[in-house]
Image (tube, rainbow, N blue to C red; front, side, top):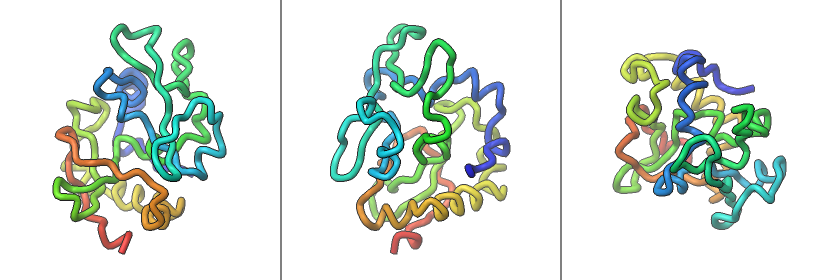
Length: 173
């Protein structure tokens, strides 16, 4: 079971956006990462080895959006994810991101801001809502933090489009 993202996004905006599956050439490094466990559930030919036990979705030139690349798991003709029920945590929890602060000292739950993810509603409202705890609890149920401790998860570096939501360093201590 995933997170109830209705508290964060609107279905129509989310379906129209495409920013989570489409990337400029410079953004292809933002394609979703898969743990070894998640990679076993999907077609490995659509993944590339990242490092250690990590894999990343391959991207190809978009047939619909000129100048963009698209995640290979997106069926552009139907605009549907071909692995929706098996998609990695990166996709399930988007627009939430788990990553380091600028100094790589503390781990945070971030959210993509409205300029990068137009589906995000009011960030301050999200900070006060139960959705933050829902996302963290979801990650716990999927052993995400245990995988982080074991070096089996990619942690995103800080990017300018991210808004700090909650410090979660203690969950990997």
